[in-house]
Image (cartoon, rainbow, N blue to C red; front, side, top):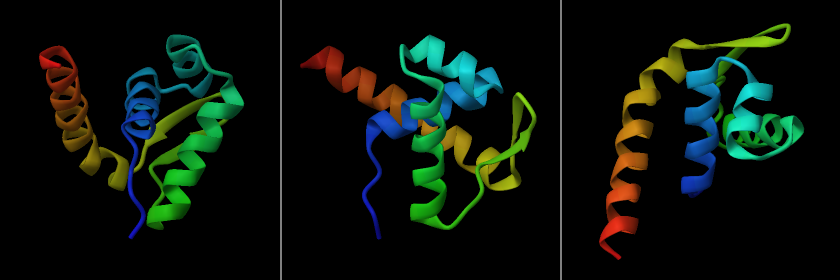
Amino acid sequence: MPNIEISQLRVFLAAAEERNFSAAAKRLHLSQSAVSQNIQALEKAYGVKLFIRRGRSVELSEEGESVLPTAREVINAARLLEDSL
């Protein structure tokens, strides 16, 4: 089983909230292709489709919707840890 990186979760969360890879890239100060590659790497590593691509916008798939709350919790926990350090 691959290890998930906090940075990958941050990209997933931004893309899920923005519903657009370009907007997520802008928010994270990344290129659109970096966001797209990150999402594709996650999908390939875990054998799931997290997003349904619809032209310029994206929609969370059922699997994406199911992991979104946990991804938010992990990111929040990471922020708390960073703050305490």
